[in-house]
Length: 220
Image 1: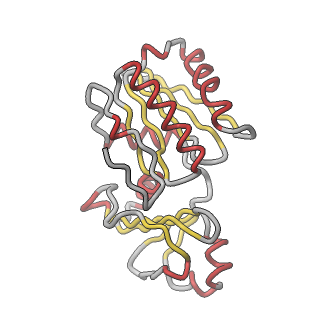
Image 2 (image 1 turned 135 degrees about the horizontal axis):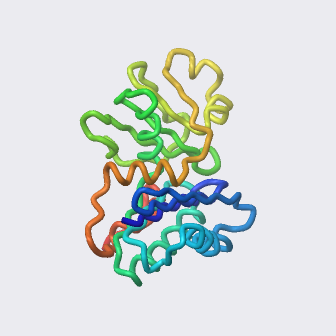
């Protein structure tokens, strides 16, 4: 099975292709806009692995919430390839990926992921991995730091503790379990998640391909 994994949610465009038991990876710092490099980057990865786009069986991508442009571009490209080839395309939440990456390291189930949004806003998702796997306990929220309510029994993972401390003060982290996730998520983590938790199906399903902008729902 040939699976293409795409993460353009951060400063680095990350691509991974699993071709049966072989893994091929490609990354490019997005000095240009994602829309200007994503197609040529996919072509480079396919050329490296010596297959064509017609040989792909499934595509997964980081659907956000994250960079509006990065997630929108990835979703559009995946939709175009998936629809034209009638292959399954699945968008996976960036916060689920944060929780998954942390659980692999800690084996701790109660996790709250906090991701920088825009201005002084943050995306927040709460997880109980042992009971709910990587579905959030409540819908992902978009809120200000002053709305955080920290719980000593939880573990908190964020890419933006410096920003949170600047808004709330140094004492905010004093008695809580807090961990940095400053490195961008990448397509290899995305692929590991997809292989373990996603049911691909046999054909393209538009409902599984929408980007996630948090607090915005698309009805179909």
